[in-house]
Image: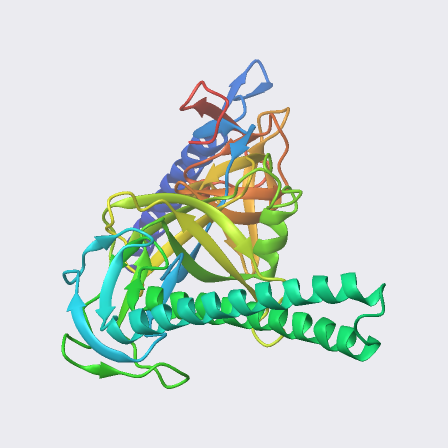
Length: 395
């Protein structure tokens, strides 16, 4: 009975081993896709190529923009101070009023200066009469000297009197000019066109001219506005090298865009000037952009954000961020080679432009770049590029 039991156990074990072998052969045959016909082995074809989204690289004109913070400054700014002393009798403007160059803003009591002008005119008239008399005396003396009727000494005296009287006329004329200037300055005028601030000193107050003269009001010009900002050295070199001279009439103007606060309205202008040196401490150069400011929205002292663009568009290859992979500190893309296989290509990237990256090195016109699914791609893997955009441009 024990012998029969052992035989049964051996039979069951042998059956189990045979079953496992049949299953293994089936699995191996399925994995290798092998069929046997008349002792010949036929192997199935290579795996199908992986469909991938791709674009064909092409350099397109790109105008690069760099962003900086800025403060707005008036094109012209004037502190209005009295140039003559006296009591303010009139204030002829409203706070914030637009004024033109030459408009009278304040009137300082003109009576003392009118009297000074009248006195200077009288002194000039007297000096001219004296000069006329001295001239006649000199002519008589010159006529009599030939007949020895007068002495040489008297002739010299007449010449001296004529010279002194002529100088007195010049002094009187200068005094009259100064008196008229003071009278004109009694009417305090706007030196520039623009918007006037409030009156800091009002009617009835006495003001003194000189080095400590008080500020009567301020004027900022209405002829556009400046945005001042600092540009790094590399951007300056990249943007200015294509511009011959900013002061030339036909020089290319470097465009600038200005936004205030968190955004909103966009103002367009151009670079007016760069400073004449690089700040060694910060590695930047001061720049100034001009904006027409026709609606008067831009005010001096405002903060804004400016974008400075290159003077001319330059050709660059653009690719989307999804096409770029990172290998430690290096950037790479996969391209499709002539055999429709994925090839690893290291690239150098430039600035961002409209959601894409500029490729400065590593790609050439016509390269087919895989734009999506980089995690599934391996070098030398067969791929089937599907062009999402028939236009030869990176999207």
